[in-house]
Amino acid sequence: MFQGLKSVVQGADHIERSKICQDAAAFKAGEHYGVAACADGHGGAKYIRSEVGSRIAVECAIEVVDAYMEDYERFSREIRKNSSYILGHMAEKFMAAWTEKIEDYNDANPLSDAEREALAKARGDENNFYSFYGSTVLAAVAAEDFQYGFLVGDGGFAVVSQDGSVTIPIEDPNSHANYTSSLCSRDAISSFVSYYLEEKPLAMCVSTDGLIKSFDTEKDFLDYHVLLATMLQNPERCQVSLEKNLMKRTHSGSGDDISVAVIFDPELLAGKREMLLDQIHQNQEEKRIREEAALSERRRRAEELERARKAEEERQRRLEMEELEEEKWKAQRMIEEIDSSVARMSQDRADWKRRLLYLEARQAEKSQERKEISFGEGGGDGARGTEKIFDQDQDLEMTLPKENAGGITLQDLRESDGSPIDSGSADPILLPDEGDAEGEPEGRMEEDFRTDPGRDPGTAPESWKIGETSPAGRMDGAAPDAEAPDPAFFETGVPRDGD
Image (cartoon, rainbow, N blue to C red):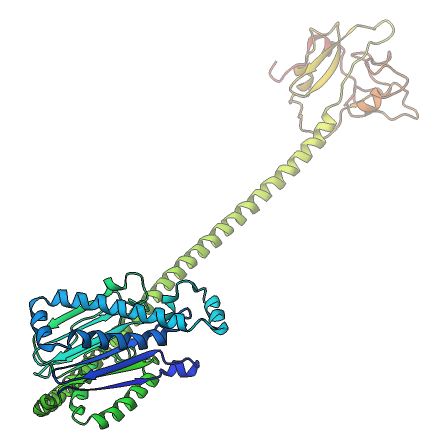
């Protein structure tokens, strides 16, 4: 004779957000078999009636199993022959039953204004009413000499074998993260997963995902069912303890609704009690070893992370030092370049200053040198013609008597005193004035002579003749009171040193 129990608790998060519990669980125990089922209604906003869908799912699971196993002897023979066909056919019958009941419920219960508002807010499709009832389902069947089960969607499916081991025979391959297969999907029939095993179990337990998510590891989840199996010998006490434990797990663990349904053979469990207790102690020892290993691993990883952190800090420090050294080198190079530039600029400034001073001096000299020296035609008996000669070296234009053009040259004038005329001299050439010595200077600048308004600037006064003295009794450039040179001096050329 099989027995069973179930427990459903509202999730801590649902309580906090004032949401109803969307899980459901049920069982049916008989002489030859027992079935346990649970379902998890989807929590999304558009699944506005998922608690109804989960409730109908567990009802249909038990009804379909009960209908197939009503003739237990026949069913046990047929499932041994072709378990895949039988279970596939059961899946079709289940989907047909769930769909029919959903349609009946939806026809009998039109959407309220609040439900329409919630559906519109969630952008749900009012015409696709099957989605209102989205849910998963898990069903476990224990018989006298075999077991089987099926599911659609995520959850926990655990089987406690007679040797005390716990296994998970089937899982939803499509479940990952927050996605799961659903009864409301169009291809839900393709999402059915089932199994069959010719072995009588000690206990079979199905649960929604809120339970398995409350454990740190899958091994802890499996060990939990061994402990649960030892408590099943006192179903009333186990029921109370289970509900308290599930409430603790949802508040400190997953926060989700949790539903559990168990089917078991109490006589078989009684004979395996000592073995189960030993298994519990072994599991506890293994857990202690695992926890120590996990703690050691955490410490090792923490040490590795610390070493890696220090190594990274040292690497960053070296990089910063290299960057600082490079920046320092760049700064030194920049200072050297600036100093060099400043020195070059200082030298250039000095050079250009000297150049400027030189150019100013040359400009002053040139302003004095660019004087036109003219010897005009003389008057009286000694008057002769003149010829202009341009001295390219000194940039001077001079007028010489035509008669003496072949006898006196610029070189003779330069070397008349035995030395070349210095073109860089700032002293002007003085020429005798045409006036008498009284009241007039003995000589004046050629520029004054040329700009004399009473005389043609291209000719010399009649009284100035080559070979004659000025009114002051001297030639231009001669010192006062100096003896006038012999006119033959100009006729024969300027004697040179050594001639």
